[in-house]
Image (cartoon, rainbow, N blue to C red; front, side, top):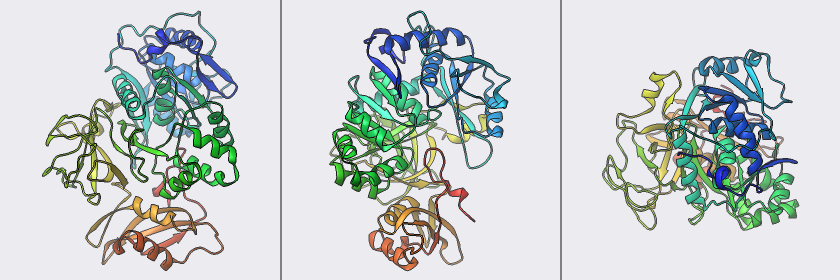
Length: 510
């Protein structure tokens, strides 16, 4: 029988599974409470979950998955229009929430089920009749235009990704994960809650992220920390004055950052203070995880590592031609066939087809992929090539040993200037190395001579004395290349960001 959570059947029942602040449940209590939820929702096609950062959300999602039903996580910060679209599109039968959750008026027409985290009669979880291709989650992801699309994530994508990460990160039941990520997104929910539960380990959710909370939990036995760049930036800022935080990060087995690129200067500040290097991974809603720096590999700042086991990855030109078509693509482990030859092991293998400079769009293929956009066959068809590669829209370069470095989104971060294809991400990292720059974003705008000129949006450390434009341009040119220097610098008080800390470039002033 296919099981997402074998530890609920045969794991140590007295061991803590989930802890949110001062509240927690053991594996035995989770099995009973989730089974009760599962029995309540069994037979439904989709169930909405009010995804507040609470114990009830985690227990509710596990219960829905045990029943073989698809969970639709709802962002508590979503506006009325977005919520109405998600409910209309996904048509959930029920809504799970915590007893104390106050829900917006637009949700009150749904039948509500309050999750009791200590409920149930001790029944054994039963995933009878559930197949690995059955939908597990419908996660809504915002595109550049139109309403959010519901990515249907099958159960096999969850298991494939979490098992691949267990291999890459040497993740076991002995690990205790601490994080403060939201639970309506892949990072916090799939990796941060379902990941430890699949291994039989423990989750300690902070509720609200803080450096004090991270220090407390890591110094109390937690072994892994998940965060986004905004969180690691705050940790880097706090380290010089917080010896307990230094001790905590120094003692962690694994520090993982994701959802956006972690600036190199934050990597270096954390490493200098703690002796520990943050590792990065790369994924998206539709693919879950694609690559990661391995726990037994080199933690190379600015890269997202190598493809995870089972994942095929290639870079393609604008016309879809694989950049490595004339060479041999590199796989993470072992060998596997691709549309363009046989992959060879990444460790110790060099390949001139990848030069660390040529920019291409990432395409991926593997068991980690979603199956469709709900009710959007047109968008689903457009997302895949005829031979099954998913078009990520992310631009990257690849080093000769297979490491991948993301340089931005195709739609917003690929700048064509003076005959060069330039990724915004590397310029942003260079700008952040300047002592007068607190935050930076880079975009392109039309230029009659260059095609596009590079524009830097800078939040200065001291707004009263921002670094001069020519100084920033020279700073970038000296670190990268002259053609990558900003031609225009615009100063802001803050950059627009979403809930995961990603910069929303389309919200920059026009």
